[in-house]
Amino acid sequence: MRLTTERLCIRNWRPIYDAQQAFDIYGDSRVTQWLQGNCDSSIQQTQERLQRYCERCADGLGVWAVVEKAIDRTIGSILLISLPKNDKTASGKIEIGWHFRPASWGYGYATEAANALLQHGFQTLHLPAIYGVTTPDNIRSQRVMARLRMQNLGFTDDYYDRTLQLFSLAAEDYSSGQLASMADSTVSISVPLT
Image (cartoon, rainbow, N blue to C red; front, top):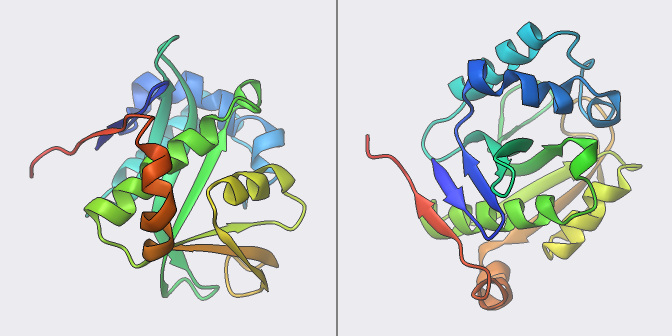
C-alpha cells in the first residue's frame, strides 16, 4: 500500500533498508514506554520487528512506515489492525495507532498520517468504525485522537492486558465533517493489485 499526503508518504516497510531509521523509533524508551514490551536493543531486533509488521499486511490492514518526504526519512509507523482481546482472539474492532520518533513529535505528523489512514479505512475498506486505545497517561496520543474527532469511550480492561482509554470514530461521523476538512490536504492512494 502507498498513501501520500502533503508532507508524508505511507508505504510498506522494507526491513533491511528501513531498520536503521526505525531503530530511532523502537530503540527509544520514550516511544516504547507506551507499547507492550521493551525497546529494541539492536538494529537486527528492529529488522525482525519490521519483518513481523510486513507479515501482518493483508486485506488493506497492516503496519506501515511513515516517511517525511522533504528529507526522505522514515519518521514513524502507522497501523490499522484488528484490535485483539486479552485472550488474543479478535474483538471485531479495527484499531488505528501510530509510533513516531521523538525528534518528529509536535509537528502534526501523527494527525496527518492518521487522517490518511482513516480515509483509507472508511472509503476503501468501508469500515463501520475505527477504534484507538491509549494508556491513561499518554496525553500526546489522546490529543491526536481528539484532533481526529474520535470519541472518548472511557476506560477499558478488554485489550492488551492493561487498563486503557478507548476511543472510536464511526464512519458516518467521519464522512459528515472530516472529508470536507480534508479536501484541502490532498491524499492520493495507490494500492498494488494482487
